Length: 449
Image (cartoon, rainbow, N blue to C red; front, side, top):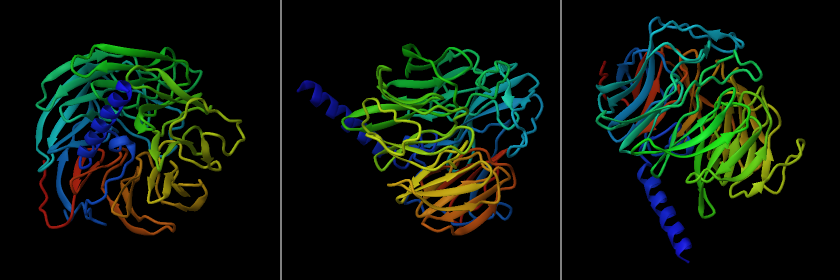
C-alpha cells in the first residue's frame, strides 16, 4: 500500500508540474515533444519585412539547428560560432557528404528576454577544434536545450553537457566524449549529434548514439554526478528520448536503429521493446491519444503506433499491420527527418522533400497527401486550429487543421529555416539562419536586437 500511495503521490506531483508548464515550452517541441499549444491567439499570417506581427527580432551569432525553449520571461537556445560561416546544403543535394569546419568553434548557450529579445547572458561551453565532422546540412549545435524552470541543460557537438541556473551561473559540466554518429558501417562518416537532453525529476538524461559504445545515461541535475548508465547495442539514431506517463508509471521512450524501447527513467531498467530495424532514424517519439508514435529511417518507411503501457517484447512480424500492442502502422511514406504531429484526431507527417501526409490518428489510414512546395528539416507545431510548418528555404506555411489541405498563408522569413518553432504565452519563436523572431498578434512594434 505504501508503494501504491507513493507512486500516486509522485504521479500527481508530475501531473501538477506538467500543468504548470502548460504555458511554457521547456524542451524540444514542448512538454512530451507534442508540439501543441492552444489558446495562444497567434497570427494567421505576418510580414517580416514590414514588421507586421513581429514583436521583436534578435540577431543570433553563429549557426545552430537547435530550437528555442521558453520558460516564463526567458528564452534559451544554443549556437556554434565558427571561424568561418559555413555553407549549408538544402534538401537532398548534399547526399552523404561531410562538411569541413575550420577551427576554432565556440559552443554557446544564450539567454534572451522573452519580452523584448534583449540578450541577458551567454556562456561558452567549449572552444576549439571540432572532435567530429557534420553533415553538409547539419550544424555543430543541433540538440535543443531543456529546463525545469530552475536549471538549463544543454548538449553540444563538442561533447559538452552543461548545466546553468537562470542567471547564467554554471552548475556543472560533463564531457561525453566524441559524438560521431554517421553512415552505418563507415566509421569515417560523421553527420553530427542531434539527440536533445531531457529532464525527469532530479535527473538530466541523454541518449548518446555513435559508431561504437553508445549509451543512455542519467546525471544528477544539481551536481552532474552520474546516477545510472545503460549500454546501447543499437544502430545509431538522431532522435530525442521522450517522457510519458501512463498506467501508473512514467516511462522514457527511446528510439534505436534496431528497437524502440521503454525504460524506467529512475533506474534505466528496460520495460518494453519493439523491433523496428532501419538506418538513419531522426524523428522523436511522442504520445498522442494513448499511442506511442514513432517513425523514421531511410527512406519513406511506415509510421508506427504502439498502445501505451506495453510490457516486455511486443515485437510483431515485419509484415504485420497490428498486434497485441501494435495499434496500427501506415503504408510506407512516413517522414525521414521531421517528427510527426498529432492534432485534432489527425496525424501530420511531412517528408524532407516536401510531401505532407495526413493520417487518421485512431486507425493510421491516409486522409490526404499534398506537396508543400519546399523542403523540410523542422517539425510541425500547432495552435488554435492551425498547423505551422517551416521550410528549409525560409517559407513558413500556415495550414488550417482538418481533413482537407487548406493553405492559409505562406510567409517568407527571409532566411533558411532548420529549427522547429516554439510557442509560449501568445508568441511563436522562429529561429532562422541568423535571427530569432518573436511572432505575435499584430499591433506591437518591432524591436531589433
